[in-house]
Image (cartoon, rainbow, N blue to C red; front, side, top):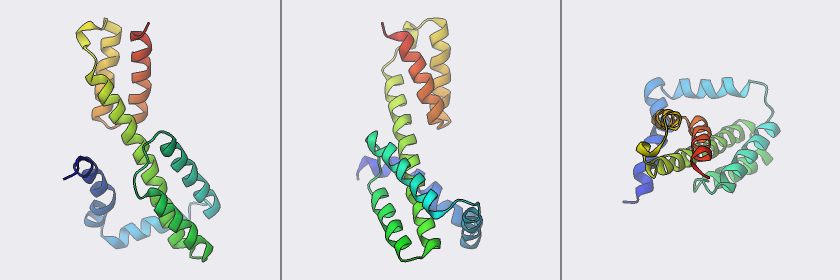
Amino acid sequence: MDIRHVICAPLYLSLTVLPLFMHGPGVVVAQEAAADSAGVSLDELMADTARAIDRASSAGCLWRDTESIYSRAQDVAREDDTVKARRLARRAGQQARLALSQCRLEHAHYQIGRMDPAQLDAAHRALYRRLQDAIRQHDAETASRLLEALTEGAEP
């Protein structure tokens, strides 16, 4: 078994399968329809998805199927099936954002594992504890910001 399946399976299930069990497929479809009526055009959604994919790709974090899902969304949009194109574009964008978040959290977790809190002064130990909390809470943005602050102070 590949380690990526062990790490990514809970995240995949929480985003795709669990909402169906918790609310039923009708509610999930109704939520998607409500999101479609939020006023964002298909072109804006596709552009936002492309930007998210570019960010994840440039960080080296893009998931395996994200680009193919986005490509299918483009193909379906050309066929004028906007509902399906929106659904696919949202899925690709969500995957790209989650991939980048996962990458940031893994980086922070790796870096914090290399640190010795006993070697840090009191202010940096407080940052270290806050970074641990951010990682536990899966808050990638806060973890990245705290890691940057912690490593700036630790490096000469």
